[in-house]
Length: 247
Figure (tube, one colour):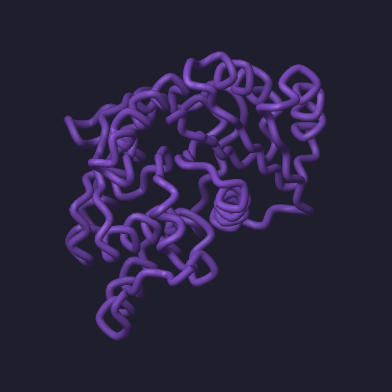
């Protein structure tokens, strides 16, 4: 069976990367479809996507939102869109080429035979595979995952990774409207929830390369949300055990 595959990319001011990213994903084997969710980029990102839709009318889709509503809400919007259209495998990735689009094939292969329900593009499963990050940021990212494991027990080396493949059963099983966080902690919460619900997760080694074009969206507030959010997740899991969503 030819599985339906959708890549979701949230954007805000990615005019320098968006067209190359679209062409690269569209050029991959495997008939990937691409959904861009743009949060009102003032730099013309959405207009560039629209121009590319003329070239890829059956493969490229766009949702425009008014203003910056957060990474987590963008992905939740995309997940619901994908489930409504019966996609089998749904991917998350960044627009800035820190995630190599060719690794989408590796993530898909890890889940294609259904041995695993979710594949994570991991920077730390085989050491530290990060290029062009200052050492302080590498250490912060690495020890964030150590912290997550210590607090929650989540058996994932790269808990904050934003490059993932889900089988649709994972997103159907999670109560998406109950996902609390919208920033950095969103990535942790999705992994923690999937693990608590019993889904099988695998980490696939990737090389993460810091963006060379555009501006990072990371902030101290996002990091602070993650630190406090991990404690909230652990407490919540004790008070109210996770249950599969009933569709």
